[in-house]
Amino acid sequence: MRTLIFSILATLQLSFFTIYSFSDEKQGEYKEFSRFFSRIEKSEIETLIKEGRIDRYPSSHLDFKLLPELKDRNRILKDIEKTDFNTAIESVFYFTYPSVRDKKYIILDSFNILTDIKKLEGITYYSYSHKEERVLFSKVEIQSGQTRPLTAAEASMSSLPEKHTMTALIEDTTFGNNKYLIDYSVSDESLVMKMSNLERITLAFFPVVKKNGLIFYTAVIPAENGLIIYCNGISRTIDSDFIRNRIGISIYNRVTALFNWFKSSYSY
Image (cartoon, rainbow, N blue to C red; front, side, top):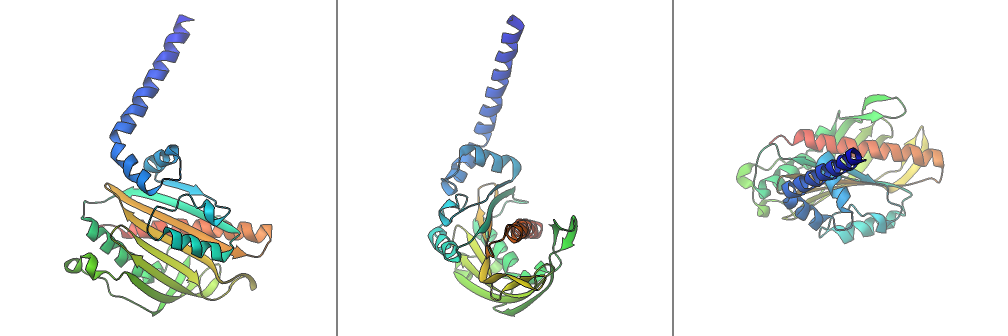
């Protein structure tokens, strides 16, 4: 019995010191993350810091609890509500900076990456139906709003447009050719990109998503030690369990692919 008691006490002591050490080391990150994510549990923030990703599957526009406390939050929620979606995922990613940079340079770098959407061409994703990695976007053609990369000499918030819009024809290996509207919103704390389809989407020649029925949001938030990336994908598709499941898997894979593209491009 004495051995059992000592064993329990030792386990509790180890757990206490592990928790204390983590909390002490990450105290600044907890405070910063809590400012942006006030609607989620502390354990989810811990998971995000430790593992670099958390996911949720919202059922209504009020259920997007991972959406950060940004000035664009209410506008984004209103846009989401208008879609009357029936399939959605939201994810938050976190990775530490490759090198230390001033916040204004981080926003600038992120803007240059996210507006250079021609580089989406050839990115891969894991295909659930094929059980292998496949090319996601086989061709990207910018039709309007193309912008040149801004240089470090121009790295001030005044050099970045508060709003920017592009249109692009994207050839998707699953959904075929489709025209997308891409909007950017820039502030001193974040960069938000929205992609929405301007034509209906078909699957095996069968229409499954109407115009503006597939939307992706990406928000880049510079933190003290790394970048917080919020992504969501929402869709209003036909009311079929098979189609909704198929679209849901595609949205998850695309959210993951978009993040991987951004992270691999962020090598500064």
